[in-house]
Length: 330
Image: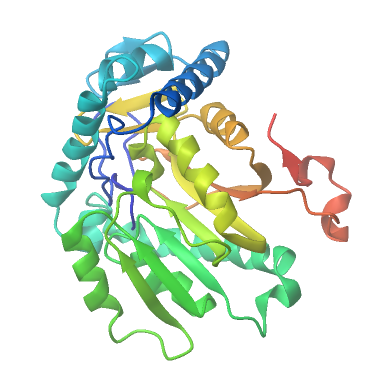
């Protein structure tokens, strides 16, 4: 996996899940100008109000029910401006994963046998997107990808390094990133290689401007609070090349609007919850696909392809189906 602080899978019940990445403590805002701190509080309030309008209710891993996302976040990270409790949220998540073995089975929460199905589903999705979004399907171009929540380099090794000339790995857990370096040392070539290994939490990372054709975010965004979720994508939008796109692959909560895991400090969101956050980020939903072939006891997994702008032209094979056209999330 990758920067995911939580394993890619979670049981469909409300018991705890495991994830492959972690996010260390965020920078405190005490040193920020008062005007900037106020602006961040206002943005968070607007986001929470929009989610409340969706009546997002959910539960935690102990079965406690919440009437709204606001109520859940208030308990998890405190009142607005309580950076101490929010910092602890991230520290606890990292601590959980520091106790997990740096192996495929470890980062996949004991479900290492689903690796092949996961990679196959991702590859089919990626190939379609590259053909449609990149010039000449990406051939004869120097392509660069960012693997967010790279963990031990599982996705880079089995998928991304075969399609991209360079892959940067982003992972806050040092032992996972060390394992990724070892796992990728003999993989690839001079023209297809892992280039940078960033030991930085997702909520603190700012990618280089217009460096990436694809930013792959899998099984890690659940460790971010809603405001940090929006902030990350707002920063990352300027890091995509023309035609570039995000792939977000995550567990879905279907029995509730969200499920909070109190042990590893992560949240599994519902499809409407994700769409509301994507809308807040100003991203356009280009395509989605359900992951197939996973055990029934696990959460459903969905892949989202997201773009910064609506493409000027819709491919002919897609134009007949209105529902499949790139569109702003509503």
